[in-house]
Image (tube, rainbow, N blue to C red; front, side, top):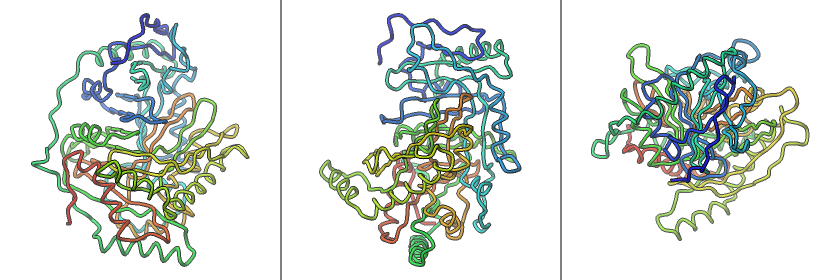
Length: 484
């Protein structure tokens, strides 16, 4: 348990239009456990750092959005309605409570939380219509949240705060009080998901032969000079119309990730079955701080974890020395440098970290950081429009790679390879790439896995890599991958 300060700071004035206060009753409490007492409320979203990491300090929990947006705007700016919705929140920086270091205050006091589906990219670029769409899910879902619970992983301290909607500070004070009371009232027990004795069977919608043919098709496109690489994926699915939350608890604990996330998508209109995103993503997408500084950390190059320490180190050395994996990573870095350059100040886009090794419970990756600074007049929405979908899950050149993906993958990706994100009223943003993510659409669970294909790719090795990537999330929920 983290230590509690001897003298907690006094909360911000209750009448303030933007507030923060410490919530010592939840200090040291796991955010996932705290969410149990809020599960009956609509729109629950938990964005949690489930393991230590350079970019995983804060965990955020929100419920009961003031409004929900489920369609991109018509016209040149698909985020026009999202901008207007966010504009309803007070933009003043919440004052740190007396005695608190302003630098230790959570980065998000209220704003938009939700997801952008991979297929939102069709609003940003012209793409062919070939793959079938078989999930009744929107291209985006963004809720406007006026209050938040936050945990600092470094200290264990819990915070509660918010921003007034339409200037109504009294309503904010009342809603924060209601959230505080419910959050500390006590956690409710939750039934466990099905165990290994009744394993969920995920069937492959792409055979190994079909996957090999897809990899060969990408290599042929590279040989003809159409692309340099493409991210090819396949989908696993299982019938499921139950409560996704117990599965997320098992995913979160069995496959801890820097960017664990749960997003309630509401019930299906036809059956009333619950829908949700359950993510154990190791990869951030885009981050914007309060000064307009931008960072993205593409993940490219993967090996499984070893069964022994020596095997683990040998696999890491092999990954670090791999010409194929290093080239794959560097090519995506070039894509992201170009994307950021569309909205960042000239000369500000840099690569401060190149090809570092990062590990999860089941795999290890090569990760690079690309950074920049937004030009005056540009914001997080402009950055998304310039960079979405992420280069690490499309390819290079991006548009031609996306066209090829549409030709080779039989079903649309939906939320997979999109982003789970928050955007604050003050312009800050945090987001992750929706990989290692289960989608509960009310009829089934789906899980996509894939990887970057280059000229040096071996089809059988690429298949084995997808199996390794699926193993983490599947094994954590007591599931297995089987042939159809």
